[in-house]
Length: 266
Image 1 (spheres, rainbow, N blue to C red):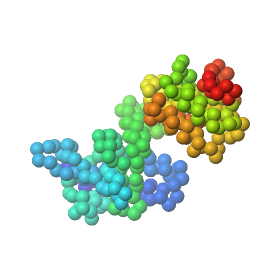
Image 2 (cartoon, rainbow, N blue to C red; image 1 turned 180 degrees about the horizontal axis):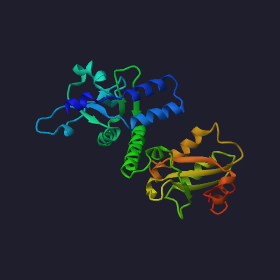
Image 3 (cartoon, one colour; image 1 turned 60 degrees about the horizontal axis):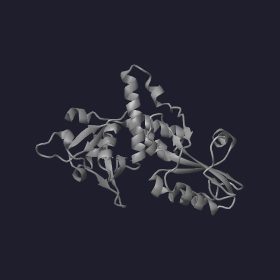
Image 4 (cartoon, rainbow, N blue to C red; image 1 turned 180 degrees about the vertical axis):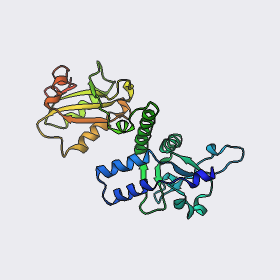
């Protein structure tokens, strides 16, 4: 194990995020992503008598704001000068292992790669989740003898807009009250956004399509407040407001609006 730890090197990753730090183009961000899902990191842990090393709790670091992160090191050189700070016991992990640890510890904001280096690399929880998903897709492709590069390409997302037969209690009244304050809004339709065929209805975002005389741009805060007012009825789901356009005519021509200006109700 000690020999394997000494052999951990991620020079390509370090170079990739240093280059990205200077100029974060999409191409350079993609290069960091590719290296992150291939990397094997050193994670400092706290030995516990009677437990196996893989069950040792990880050491965490706290920034000046009091936020806690999981520290990952790319090699022993990055780790060696800080051993007095973070200890000397460590595990070898990949980004999937790191994300699994984040899931189990909600207080952690994400991971920080080479925390004492300048620059370092910080990945928040959403980014770690995305990296872990890519890691899984690449490993699955390799096991199946498929092209791992194909697994890295963005998947086409077949989004569907679904109009429910009825809305949760309170939604119609609350949404209508908010839209009446926007005097140029003539009609509104509200639908659920289905991103995956097997997703759960209770996890779907909502979309409100507005037919208005003026653009939404510049009024984002007002519509965001309207969306937040629906939280007691739909939970902590996103409410997306969108201007009506020809691409949405197939839905709005068939569905009854949830709000009409002429009578202030459905």
